[in-house]
Each structure stands twice: as C-alpha cells, then as structure tokens.
Image (cartoon, rainbow, N blue to C red; front, side, top):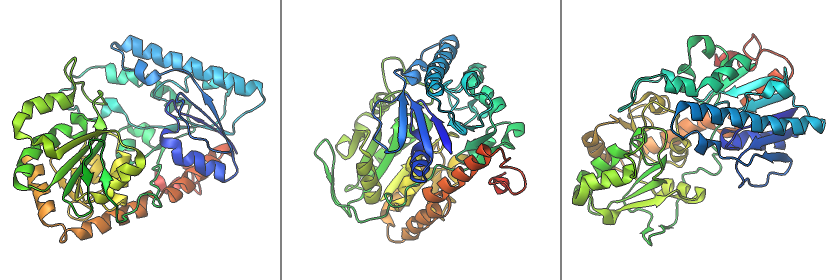
Length: 411
C-alpha cells in the first residue's frame, strides 16, 4: 500500500503505525510540523514550517478557525507537491482537529480516509470552572468535516469513541495505538539522578506523577493538596512530579501565573518542598525508569483522552492510584489492577497513598495484574496488526464494519 500519514505533531498517535507500515514494506509518506523527527528509513517526511498548535491557543474563536483554515491550505500545498511528482496514496490516515484534512479532496478526491476521532469535546461533561457555550463545538468544525468525508474513523478507547454522537459511533473502530512492552518493562531500575542533584534509589519510598502539563484537568491540584498529609506521616518518602507549567487542555491559570505557582502559594509551608521534586519534562528512558522505581504512581484525570503515561506506568509494573473517572475505569478496576479515588478529594488520595506506602508487599499482586492488563489489551504489535488490517480494507474498497471485515467485532 501507499499510505499517507497526516498529523501536525507527527508522529503523535502514529508513532507505532509508521514504523509498522515501513517494516511491512509499505510506501509511507508523512506530513507534519515538527522539525525534530528521528530518521526512519523508508519513510518520507514532508515538514510544514508552522506552529498551528500555538495558533489555536490564541483568544477568539474567529482566530482559531482561521488558524485551522491556514493549516489546511499549508497541507494542501504539500499534497499538490506529492501529486505533481506522481505519488498518490491508496489510503490516508489523519488527525482532523487542526485543519490538516480540510482540502484533501482538492488534491486526492475519493482516496479513502481513516480519520483519528480523538474526542468530542463539546459532548463531554462540563468540567470544573468551564462555562457553557458554543466555542468548543465550533473549534471542532474540522472534525465534523472529516466525519462526513471519512471512510472510517478510529478512537483509542471506548470512552473516546462514545463521546461522539450515536450516528457517528457506528463508523468508528476502537483500536489503541499500543504500548511497546519490550521497552516498558518492570525491570529492577538503577538509581535515577534528577537535574537538581537528588538521587532516587531502588527500594526508597517514592510517589510519582506525570502529565504533559501540570493542570487541574489532570488532577495536579488534588495531588498537591494531598501531599502535606502524606509527607507529614511518611518521613522517608520522596515525590517526583513530571510536567511543564504551560497551560494545557483545561481552563488556563490566572493571567501571568501557572497552576504550579498558584498551588505552591496556596499550600505555603505546609508542603515540604525538600522532598517534592519538579523535573519538567523528562527524557523517555528516564520517565520509564521513574515508573520502575515508583511505589505509587498517581494518575488522575477528568473525562478526557487517556494518557499514554498511564499504560506505560502499568506496563512498567507501577502500582497506580487513579481517579474514578470513565477513562481510567475502562483500564483499571479498583482493587484488581490498581486503586481508584475521587478525582477532587485530596483526603481520600492522601489516605490511599499512605495505605500503598505502608502495604507495598501486600499490594504487589496489583502490579502484576496491571502489567497483564496492558499486555492483554494494549500490546502495540497486536494493535498495529489490527490498524493495518483496517487500512488494507479501506485501500481495497472493502467496508471494514461489514460481515467479514476487519472491524466487525469492534463495533
């Protein structure tokens, strides 16, 4: 097959798919905006010199819609260049949110499209501090355009698929991008030295937390408010918090500040800063090492896209304390693969963390079960086989959801 991958943050969710397609001998071209792409022999990468993600964070829905239109035109220019050189894909896989797919038909009309239907923001439960309004729906007009154009859609989890209206769910397959179980392993990790000089040793009580952005949507506020009680009762425990201070996917911090600064000011001297370490974003190998060392990995989220970090932590054998919210409950059953708490209850989180720190040996079965759950459902090799079978159906003009199709059992 000749496969076109389109994602402004490529590889994004296509990191395993791109490698699997190239390894299987398919002709793969990718379009994205990043300039730090690792070399993948056999893949041609067409870079767009723009930062549409930054543009979509500008105030005002008009400016955001214009940014999506501009991104669609930039992608169309790349497509025209490919077409002029005689290259035509058998199937296109793309993320529609940023506008990348808006003008696909201007160049490659009728080529089957597999659209990454990540999440319907407008149909999610209202989040804390979120005002009702049309802006979320308007920001997703590009996704609606893709829904009308696509031959099929794909979502990573059932929760994400179910966020879309029923008429659309019947055309969306649930196939995760998967976890590399050869890299994410519950190995005995060596010491991990942080940038501040702190050295974390195997066997040392350690709480970990990882999120791209430190924000309430991912439970950062609940974690910090729980820590004073935990640190007061566990004098040896260290806490490592991975993530940057930029505004993320939820409501922004007050102007000129960040949620980290706001919460540290709120907690003041009640938080022992000597044992709470903010690392920023870590290199991937160090992040996995942190999961392997962790005694309790905290993963909290409002109803939103499930983070890779949760599955990677589970695959590394971390004991997860997660939130009782739909994305997490799809993966973790309380008391079976981890422990679940109320997303907005710091006291319950503190009590659960203290229990985990005190009962490490007794709770070891949860670590094994967490790894087993990821191996059963999210092994990237199995996930990629299913995604490529779906692409083969689309490229051949077959309906993957019909009887005998690759996604019949996924509906």
